[in-house]
Image 1 (cartoon, rainbow, N blue to C red):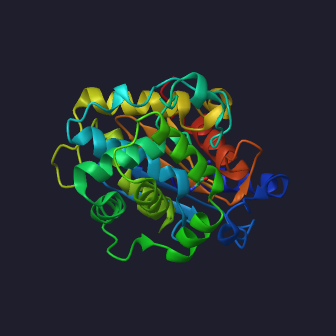
Image 2 (cartoon, rainbow, N blue to C red):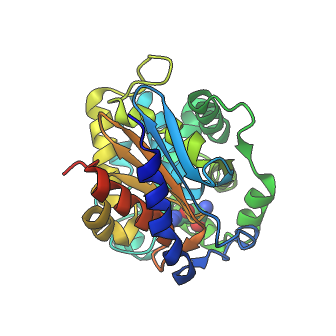
Image 3 (tube, rainbow, N blue to C red):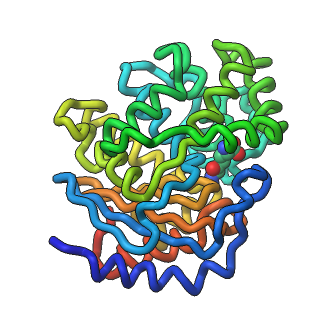
Length: 302
Ligand code: DON
């Protein structure tokens, strides 16, 4: 089935929204992104990929990397859930407030605190969390050039006082296995990966295929794939997860680079990108395009 027309219409629906958002500049290297760029890609479970607009332009994937960190950790059979919860936080993605009353156990794996704990575990399990995520994305997308943007990673590290505070705080509760500096380095390395809508739509397909990778091997059990999708739906877009579920009706993960990767279990994935963000840190254009596409096609879990 060819969805070219629906993709074009969804991109057109997003364009008027772009002026209503702001490009993230708390990581200075991201501040130079073009607020008028916009792309949308769709990959089907059989590996076909379609796109509209700037769907082949690489961008900083940022927090979208957190879903791959979680999946690769669960793929080892690791029981990470005693170190990180799976409830929506209702607070901004970089908030510190819940960590103290909740004894250094982050609410979920997609807020910064939770992703830092998952990165710590993946670092222990693989010896190189940044490389593990990069390699996985290269394999699934078939793009050998996909890489970390080291200027972005360095910019994050230089201005990352909040993430450093979160990581030290987690360590003070005994919920970190590796040195703070190593965990932060790997966290920034995977957040600063540059990939396109095309690459990410293909890389996320294992979640639409109930855990099965592009080469037919199994990454996750069907139960774990279901669980990751469930946590994406409830926590993947932070304190806007309720609004995202209401408007788009799909599990999804956003990043402050402006990308959102959404999963349609059994059917495929969608990845939208536009750098202008709303106040919760989600791309205004990406949410609008996904809403338009799922409304027009009925591609939703509901
Ligand atoms: O740690 C940070 O703040 C960024 N590397 C990632 C934050 C992010 O993408 C939040 N997403 N919407």
